[in-house]
Each structure stands twice: as C-alpha cells, then as structure tokens.
Amino acid sequence: MGIRDSKVKRWTVLGLISFLMLGAYLVTDLLSPLMDLLRETEGWNADDFGYFMSAYGWFNVFLLMLLVGGIVLDKKGVRFTGMLAAMIMVVGTAIQYFAVVGNFDPTQLIFGYKAQVVYAALGYALFAVGAETAGITVSKIIVHWFKGKELALAMGVQVGIARIGTAFALVIPLPFARLFSPPSVSAPLLLGIILMLIGLAAFFIYTFMEKDLEKENLANDVEPEESFKLADLGLIVKNKGFWLIALLCLLFYSCVFPFLKFATSFMIHKFHVSDELAGVIPSMLPFGTLLLTPIFGSIYDKKGKGATIMVIGAALLVFVHALFAVPFLNNWVIAVALMIILGIAFSLVPSAMWPALAKIIPEKQLGSAYAMTFYIQNIGLMGVPFLIGKVLENYCIISTSGAEVGYDYTLPEVIFTGFAILALIVALTLKAIDKKMGYGLEKPNIENK
Image 1 (cartoon, rainbow, N blue to C red):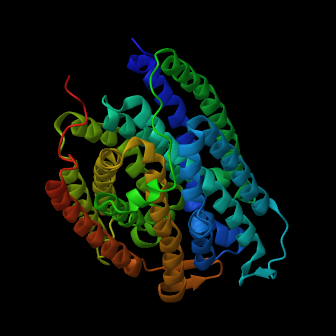
Image 2 (image 1 turned 180 degrees about the vertical axis):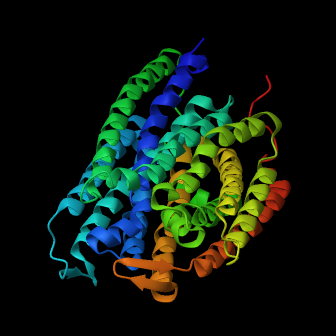
C-alpha cells in the first residue's frame, strides 16, 4: 500500500495544510469587525476602510502575482510554492501591524488617503499575494493526495477548517481590542502574526510527507506528469467550462467575502446589535460551513449533482441578500435566520465548485487554472469593498454624532443582490453546458473500481 493510499497519512496532510489556511483566513478578516473602532481610534472613515479592504487584490490583479504564483506552482511544485507563500503572509501581516502602531501625521496624504491607511493597505496587499498563492497550492495538494478518493469531502473539510479562522476573525478582534485602554487595533494583528508563524511551521512539517511521496513515486517508477508549458494557458482560456467556473467564483464570492468585511457594522447599524455581540451573528456563517461544506462535499463525492448543488447555492444567495435589502426587516432574529441560510449557500457552492474545476482541467494545468480563477475572484475582492466603502460614505450616512456615524445599508444590499442574481444565471448556464459538453459535473467523484 502506497503513502497516498493510507487514510491516516493523507488526512494528516490535510490537517497540516488546513491549519495554514485557517491562519490565512483569520488574518484576511482580522480588521473586518473594526471599521467603527478604526474611525474612533485612528480616524478612518468608511471610504478609508473600503480602500484598505480593496488592497487585497492590488498586487494579485494589477501585478498579476496570482498568475505568477500559479506558474511557479506548476513549475516548482507545491513544497517550494507553499513555503514561499507562508513566509510572504507573515511579512505582510507584520507590515500591517507596524503601520497601525506607527506614529503617522494624520494630515499626511498619499494618493488622497491617510499615510497610515496606505501603508497598512500595502501590507494587506502583500499578505494577499501569499494567501491566494497558498490557496491554489493547497487546492493542488488536495487534488494530488485525494483524486479518485474523497476529493470533494477533503476540499470541504479544508474549507471548513479555514473558515474557523474567518469566524474567529469576526468574533474576537473587537472585544479583544477593547480589553485595552485605550482600545488597541494593533493587538489583534499581533495575534495574527503569531498564528501565521504556527501555520508556517505546520506547512514545513507537511513538506517532509510530500518528499516521502515523491521518493515513493521514483522507487515505483511512476512517470512524472508532463511538465507545464506557457502554451497550456491558452488551452485553459479556450475552455468554456473554465470561464463559467471562474465567473461563478467572481460573482458568488463578491456577495460573501466583501459582505463579511462590513457585516459587523451592518449588524450594529441595521439590526441594532451591541458592539460586543455584533460579530457573533456573521460568525455563524463560517462556523456553519465547518460542518456543512464537508457534508455537501461528501454528497458530491458519492452521489454527484455538482452543477445542481451550485445552482441551489446561488439561488439561496439571491434570497438572502434580497431580504437583507428590505429596510423594515431589522429584527436581530431575522438577521440570524438569514445568516444561517447564507451559511448553507456558502457551503453548497464551494463544495462543488472547486472539485468541478479538477474535472474540467487536466492536472498538469490545474495550478494555473486555480490561479487564473483566483485572479478573477480577486477582481471582485478588490473592487467590491472599494465600491461599498464609497457608497456608504457618500450616499448612506444617516446620522453623525462626534466620531459615531450611522449608516443605511439598503443600497449596498441591493448591489449584493444584483451580483447574486448574475451568479445564479452563470450557475444555470454551467449546468446546461455540462450537459452538452459532458464534463461530468453531475457524476460522483469517487471512482468505482
């Protein structure tokens, strides 16, 4: 029995790489619940906050770093690329920390924004290069160790564990920052640095297991897969299924991750939840996916129906944001119910979408295909928070009292609903194309031998 055939070893691999992604997801949303506190302590407004959050896509989109990361992954392999990505995340988080603790002149502007905001954003942009490269690396590792086995379940477990980081990021930072006098925005970032260092250590341990697998393949005369060529990018671009997956990824995640950036403030201003509890309701989404994503992934592995799962998830997304946009639905019980439904949608689509890409794209091109998909996704992760921040600051202020500002989130939720409707259209198109092209998205992942 080979290393990959050992359930203990392949699930140990999954645990190690998932911990790195838990840290990445936590740091990604570490400042999300602190929009109002950043206004209070650092003088950031909603426009500054949206600008900072948009930085996640700067280097990945404008400098094409995600595409570079995908090519490096296919050329240099998962061990080298994963370690590099983890180290970049540590450095990027540290830059954010030093930007927040730095003593900046509040009148000093760079490109029309406060110098502190710009430097923190640059650290966030660098961190995002590592986080997104780690994401595609981990996806390829899972395909490498689980293809023909529990692929969708493994991807679902990895996503579920990673989203524990998102849940902690929504719940912990605000009350933790307020433990200090005066409240400290930098304290949560310091915790983020420590967690990223632990994630780096976990991935380093995994590299030894990957090296053992490579040695086993050599000993068994397993032919290495054909090397990646730049011309393969053209083959990916010509694939209709790839573009539909990429567009679904862009639109679906544009309705979820940017929403979570503002969700704590949303709960405070629309549903009148206290500061201490405002992050708890949004955290129900990632905590829920911890269980649901693996369950839906396991269903896909055994029963198939991947395209149908994506359609159902997109439809639920439309339902949730449409109701969030209704002004008079402002009871916190409604917020909890809709967040639970959003969690179901957030579990359905990724549990089928990422394994589906492995059915459409050959494995030697998979790293670059994931990179291109993440690149397109990053356009939304960059543009949508910037848009929402601008909309809030320019059109949605309903009251001001010193450092406290009240926001009406109706218009932002209408925007999210529009993206969700487009995601549903793309999911329906993907299901139709799958039937025509025979990608096998409705077939089970586990191979019957």
